[in-house]
Image 1 (tube, rainbow, N blue to C red):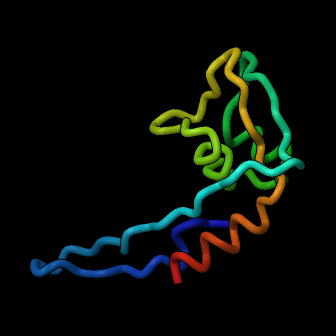
Image 2 (cartoon, rainbow, N blue to C red):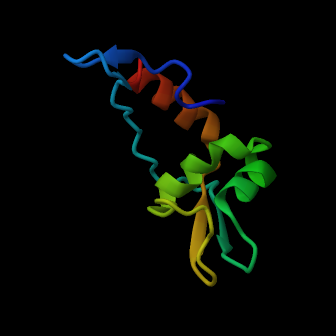
Length: 98
């Protein structure tokens, strides 16, 4: 899933193109979430590929854990929540950004 595919492209008064602001859903914990501890070599995109079979969904794990701003590496020793309801999160994302 490419997050920005359906985000509207706008133009400013000088004709410069930009994408409309992207909105993200709140990602509340559920009882089915998986918890792991960050180890050497863990990256958000690799975890997304492992748990969701789609490395582009790394942003779900990042948003759920308030990490990943400019860096996909998971801090060693940090407990990370892998949201189990990623299909619902994607649906909410799409709804917010229609």
